[in-house]
Length: 193
Image 1 (cartoon, helix red, strand yellow):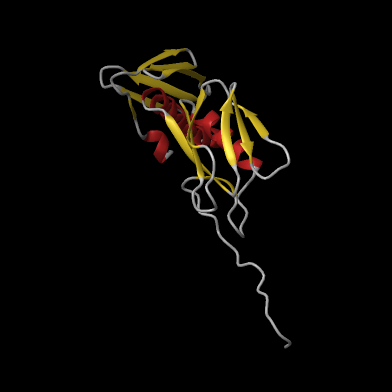
Image 2 (tube, rainbow, N blue to C red; image 1 turned 180 degrees about the vertical axis):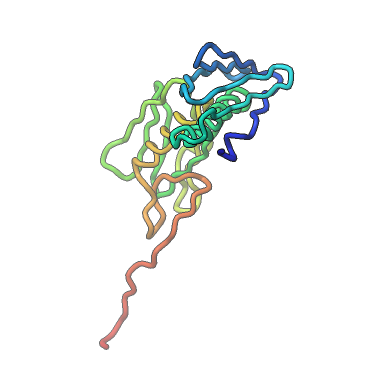
């Protein structure tokens, strides 16, 4: 039995959960999401106790054990997404680096000879706190927000892939809570050995 799969999912007051066959539909103040559950996993909605129970009827089958915790986590993410939402804070380090939002696209100036554009997916919002870096100490900051945790994480990873942080000066795009392991550059000595 999966330890995560056994935990019940608490349904907040403003969230409504419906089940039609294998399809689970979750509605809340921030939006609506739906997902098809795997046929080996049974989902029971207890409206009186405001809980969702995810059950694995065949624990002897390996695939069922694997899917038990995964399905529970995906449903819990949908409930959290429509009630609170998710966010990923990101930073841009490097002299002259900047980020702008124009016409549903994010435009990055990150040391290439051309600006790099990324289309913002439907259901994702971007809040730019600081649009340009100020030297190497003050980074450009922006936050990616959305109700779908999978889509949000994928979009944030694609943004980071444009210019990953390099280990010498730390220039590039990184998550706000990311630690970049720094390397020491070349040591020059003067005089003859």
